Image (cartoon, rainbow, N blue to C red; front, side, top):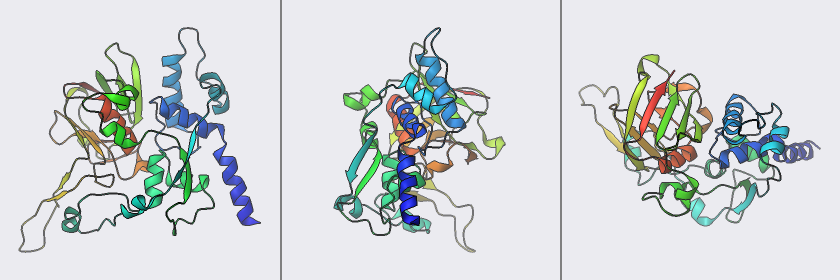
Length: 311
């Protein structure tokens, strides 16, 4: 009886209006960060910005009820989910990320450690939400051919392959002329050359307020897909020198799948290995996005783009 109740609850969760609205907003570039069916502050801001940008003068404002908002802004939304089979290639690509820094540097690629992690990111989901969408899956024994239900999104690789700007990814990610980073709201917003808002992405900021970049204007200097990461430990064993280690790229690289460097040494906008943590003050100084949002922003951005840090 308990198992049946859990499955029934998961089915109800999969059909919630809030979940559908999160998916629709994300598709338009207004991210709530991890899709989980829970309606909170990040979702409210994404909907509010979408309403401002699309309602027009005298149009509807953002309703408080997610179900009503779905009816107003995305009537008849369909094709929200995909059923995808886990492949042998998916399973073969899994890696174990070691604790030792030198061992990490020896990896060829910092890929996903679990199927759950892999498909949660493909669906822009929290791992708990993925479990609730697929209540019958034994996550400790996922085999080739296992079918999973996830929100339908373009692969991250499409955005990472967007430079030079051409093809489907470029069409899905319009070019940004300005990025604005709000420290108080923990979000990055992107604007086109006409000043139109074209993307909103929750971010994490520095835990140490002294490391938050000062308010004012910066510039994008580099954009790199699947960047490596140079790790320098704070100390070394007695009698040894501090050794730097270069970790390879991949979704479990400390800076995720994309790096957007700024003209402030050591600072940038990048992905993260912990998407559920985005939106908090916990970074070392950079601005962290979920990997899927970092990839999308990467496809929208090029060196020279203005970046304005605001309170």
